[in-house]
Length: 526
Image 1 (spheres, rainbow, N blue to C red):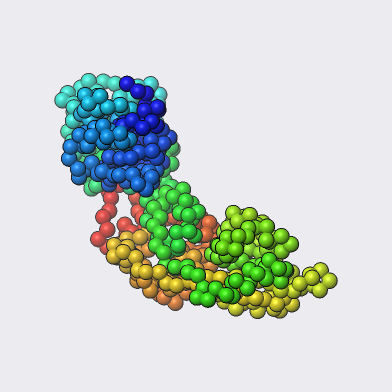
Image 2 (cartoon, rainbow, N blue to C red):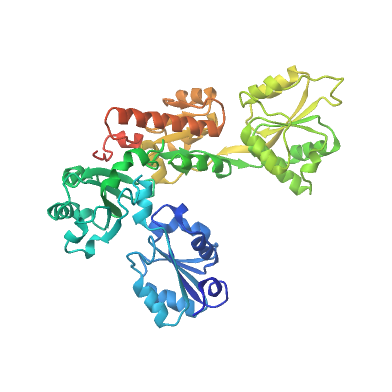
C-alpha cells in the first residue's frame, strides 16, 4: 500500500480519513489542512465542520454525510475513479471510532487510504474548560458510557475519569460510581459544545449532579469529568472567562474594512458577524480622478492626504489602471488620518509622513498639519481624494493654514442592500449582544436597512460624533472608544464585557450575555 504523503499527492485515487478535532476549527492539524487543500471530494457533517471547507479549493465537491447515504461506497467509487477524497471525522478517527466500516470498505476495495489523527475532545475540552487531564495522581481514564455496563471498575481509580456520551444518564452514572466507592463529594464537571464559543461547563459533585444539571441545558456532544482535577478550574479557566465569550457582535462594515477588527473580536471570545451597511462604488464621472492622478505624477501637489483606507484603495486602483506603482509618490508628502489608513498605505508601499499622534480624525490631522511656508514649500497645493459625502472641515482648516486644496471624489458610498431576514430579526429582537458603530453613516445605514437594535444590545461607538448620531436615533450608547480607531473600539467593548462578568461573579451570579437578559431568553442555572 502506498504511503499517505505520496499517494495523495500523486494522480492515483486515495481516501484520507482526517480527524476534524473537537469543534474549534483552529485545532485542525496542519496535515489535515494540507489534505483538504488538495482534495477533489470532501465528505463531512457540514453543520458541525462546514467551517473547515475554507481550506478547500473552490471547485472541490462537497458531500454532506448527514444527508447522503452509502458514504463508504461514495468514497471508494470516487477513489477508484482517480479522485482524492477527504473524509472529515469527529475528533480523532481512531478514538471511539465511528468510521471503522468506511476504512474497512477502502481496504476491501484495495483503495489507498491514510488515517490522520485529530485532537480528541478527551484532552481538548478539558483544556478549554481549565481542567488538567492528570494532576497529583498520574492516571487518566476515558470511557464511552454507551459501552459500560458495570461502573465499579471505573470507580476504583483515583485519577481523572472522562466519560463520553453520558449526559442523558449522568445521574444514574453518578449513583453507580458512589455505590462502587467514590465519595459523593467527588468533584464533577459537565462541559457541552466544548472548544466552541457555545461551550458551557457545569461544576458540581457526584452527590449534587442531578439538581445542578436539571436546568443547565447541557446536551451532547458533551463530556463528564470526574475527579479532583475539576477543582483546578477556578484557577485555570481561560476560555469561558474571556471578556466577550460567546457574545454575538454585529460589525456593520464592508468585509474589506473589517478583517482586523473581526480577528481582534475573535481573540476576546466573541462571535463577530459582518453586515455590510455601505457599498463603496467608483465616482459617477472618472475624469476628476484622472486629472488628479496626472497632477500627482507631474508635480502639481506638495501633499496628498488620505482620510480613509477606501481612498487609498481608489488611488491604488487608478495607479494600476495607468501602470503606475508607489514610486509615483516620490518627492510628495503623504498624510494619513489614522492607523488603519496608514496600514493601507504601507501595504501599498508608501510610508506616510504624517499620522496624528492624538485624535485620529480630520480635526486631529489639522492639529498637526504644518502651515504653508513659501520659503520651505515650493508648492502650496494639497490633493484630497475622498468620499462623495466627506465633510468640508478638513478643506476649510487647510485653507486657513495657507494651503490650496483639490478636493476630489475618489469613491462614492451608497447604502447597502438589506441583510437576510434572520439577521434583521436578530437585530430588532435582541439576538445580538453588541453592535459596533464605526461612523455616523453606519448608524444611519444600519437603522435604514435593518431597523433599530433591541434595547438589550450593547451599543459601542467609535467617537463623540457617532455617539451623537446614535442618540438621535434613540439608541443608548454604552461604550465609546478612548480614541477613534476600530482596535480601540473593540478593546473598549472587551473592557465593558470584563466588568460585566466581574460584577456578576462578585454578586454570586452566573455571567450572562446581554442577549440572555431579554424576555423569553433561555437562562442557564448555575
